[in-house]
Amino acid sequence: MSGFPLSQILAQEIYPAESGSAFEQKGSHFVIIGAFQSLGNANKLANEVVAYSLQPKIDMNSPLRLYYVYVFASTDKEAAVNETLRIRSETPYKDAWVFHGPPADPVVEPEVVQEEEEVIPEEPVVVETPQIEEPLEEAIRTLKDEIANLKPGQSVNLNNIHFLPDSDILDEAAQEEVRELLAVMLSNPNLKIRIHGHTNGNDAGIIRQRDPNNPDFFEDRVQKSSRGSAKQLSELRAKTVSDFLTTNGIDPKRMKIKGWGGKKPLFKTNDSQNSMKNLRVEIEVTEV
Image 1: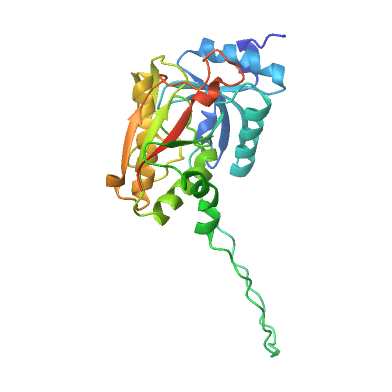
Image 2: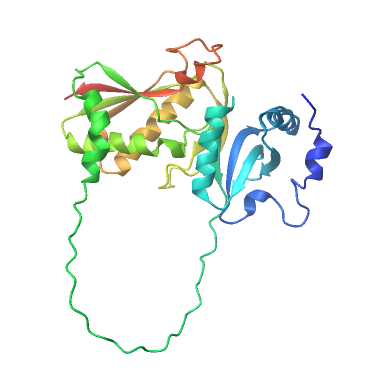
């Protein structure tokens, strides 16, 4: 594979001298595939990704003092999410996530003054109002079916609840399933659960903790970064799910949390095809 030297990266103006960090661009969304304390490690990843027809750039997240390797930037949030999902499915970078820059300044449309037109009365038109399916019923259909036959002590994997790498911040792609869980809890007031968090392996590392005062559970806003164990990370992730449910009206007495770290893997950690499935959240029914 051809090299991607640091001099070449810098030549692409990854650190623009005048405009500062790319992450300061208002309203921008970046697809991140790695975050490093060392610029050398960031450059090593940039060397690797060119083999997958990606165009890596490196910039620093100044508040965290971390070098981010990103491969896509756009003011279109949906485009960034779609590119993240594509990268996860077509490349080895299954931890890719969307990082949001500062909010864009509001767009003020100029007032358009129109000449008054003669109003011609028309016969009223009766339009049949389409029947809209209740969104709550639609949301709970799948998960409700999964837990309907569970007895206390039995559990179900929530395969689509994932988090940003090394953090307890919910991934954008987790929104649908975490809201399904909320809908199930709202529609079953007697249901009590235990939320289990699992990691892929037991290695300690940097944990990026979400800002507990931020009402957006999917925004990459970190309160602090500190070294911690895999068990601590898994417990924080279970707590994030619990906090999301509590914030949206679920009595915290109906939930307990448990962090296992990597003690209960589904696959061997060296299984390149399946090891990422060890990163998961399980919901155990404790009372119905």
